Picture 1 (cartoon, one colour):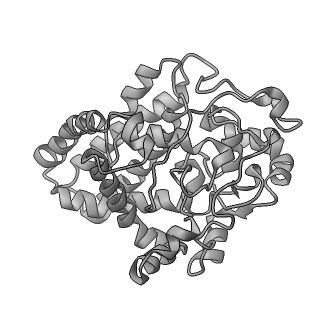
Picture 2 (cartoon, rainbow, N blue to C red):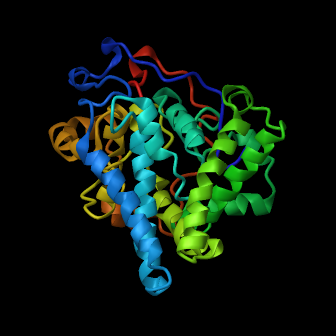
Length: 349
């Protein structure tokens, strides 16, 4: 087990209207389908992000790194947020076209198809925070936790603070993911989803092909060493993404109480395409990012009631609580997430 897990699951599916919370059924959107044929705000933002990344990285030899790096960090973070939008069926009705928008790996280390697959599994809400079934869970089964050595426990524990998650986790997440992928490629990975559900070798070969134009651009056109790009841009961008995901979920008995809300985040919120309103996102994952603020204002009271008041007022509130204090204990309180009753089945992802 690692801090980046890929586990067995079944594909997300539509949930009968009768199983949705009262007052919310009428608002559910079809899984992975935009409301219009082409969502122009998202499409334009994708094109602007790529264009800005090209322009800023091209300035590497003309502008000081202290100027280039922060701007590029924001653009790579935004690219990650846009990939997340694309996972959920945006910006067009045609999955093949959407996929093309996401394949260029500005972060270099994460194949889009692997992210697409694991994130869809994460959206099976009845399994949220499960140590095995939720690929994005940081929780452990108590028996697995007991087998860890002191050093491994320390590195996992320190990442339960926001400072540790950003500083150490930025490297750790990449390293553990690549380790798991290597095990899968060597056929030493025993977990069903990794072994059977995807052609891991094919995904990585395609990913490496798409890495070539990024590397050629950085090295030959921009004159930027790859280590500089990785250390000064990719790692900090990964740290920003980890700020968003740090307090998104907590282990709770009810599925809808496991997902948090971060309100009034008017700097990081737009950068994360309003995924800070995470309970809303899990409720209607096919909703385009630019409709989140208005929808949240309408459904705020209900969402807060349903998630048990798991609300933070900006990411400064998250930092105030957890910068040097742990967000939660790592052994899952029930070992595994118990099977959910029918009324708690998730919406479609």
